[in-house]
Every structure is written in structure tokens, then in C-alpha cells.
Length: 255
Image 1 (tube, rainbow, N blue to C red):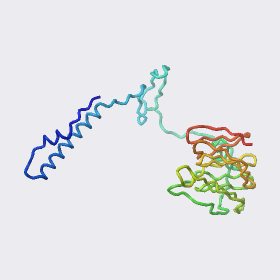
Image 2: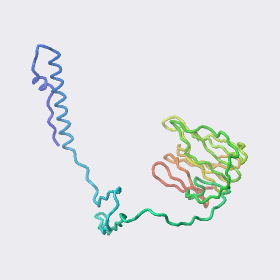
Image 3: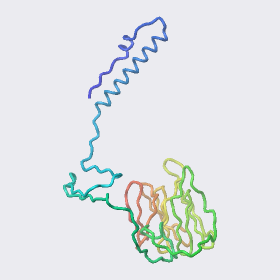
């Protein structure tokens, strides 16, 4: 791609000379702006257009009117698109699994798979107690960690990575400040909490995994990673599983 640039000197030479100096300046400025716009248009014209990916384009907002059997140009395999245009919304019967009393809530959504289950509640749930557990959400920090319940304790972490353990009566058992100063400065936020076999496994945005004795709050050891570990971990079968912000998955021995 070639661009033809007009020297500034030639622009000034083409500008007519008037007796009014302000008129000369405005005319020269208008010519300069016009030349700049022409150069910009030439530059954009010479840019390569983005190549579209091969394949069938289907508008997701419009239901298909017929069933089609098409061959994918990418995988060279037949792809079937079903007719959804004739389907009408209607009620269908379904059966829930039996409700389960959740004595412990060891991970986000209740279990190590983070999938949740059908918990059983009383007929009239009511608030037993409430305490302030630390700092809430702000412009710089968010509460990423969901509370968990295990071993007759409730474990929570605030937006400043302050980890605390409370009894089922609402009394604080212990508290740890897990915040670290990041490379760019400032406090680093929390990640998530998991529980398994008497141990807490806690991640932070500083890229650190903590192994903590749940009963006492004693830090047994830590494991550092190259990226932020701001997602809730899973702990099962003697291992801790987590992902980091660089898209990597990790499995670490719990002991």
C-alpha cells in the first residue's frame, strides 16, 4: 500500500494570500485538514479486510423453518439442523430428586463439583443470628468467596481477604488476614474457600493457595502460582483443584 503525502510547504504555497492575515491562516488550516482527511481515507482503503470464517450462518433470533442436512466446510462432516419453528411452549411434567438435609456446605453451591443439589429447608426458615464479618464490596474490591459451613463452623472471607471462622452460635473462633500487596501495589482481593477432611483450602487474587487447619486457623503451608487464583477451588480425595487467571488448571496434593 502506497500513500502520497503532500509536503506542508506545498500546502502553504497553494494557499492564496489575502490582505487580512487571519483569512490567510483559516484558509491554510482548512487545506491542511482536507489533506489529512484524504490521507486517512487512503490508509483505510488500503487495509486488508477481515476474512470471515467458513461455515453456515444461522440467525439465532429466528427459528428454523425446516430440517437441513449440511456439510460443515471445516470438519467435512454432516451437521443436522432441526426444525424448531413448529414447537409450541407447553408445560411438561418432571420429577425432582428427594430433598437432602445439608449438614455441611463445604464448597460454593454445596459440594466439590460446585453443581449444587436439592436442599431440604424447614417450613418456616428464620434468621438465627447476624454478625459483621469485615469489609463489603467497593470500587476496588469485591467479595468473591461464598461462605461455607463444615465441622460446626461457618467460614467467610471479606473483600480484603480477611478469613474468619464462626461457631454455629455466631461467635468468632479465629481470623486471618490473607491479603498481600500485589506487584502493582494495593491490597489483593479474595478468591474462594473449600473444605475437606478438617482442612480449609483458600485462594486469593495474589496467586496463592493456603492450606489451613480448619479448627485452629493455623496456616500449614502455601502454594504460589504465576497468575491470580480468584476462583473457588475444589477439594476431594486428597487433592485440591483450581484454575488461575492465565487459563491453567491445577491439581495439588492436599497433604
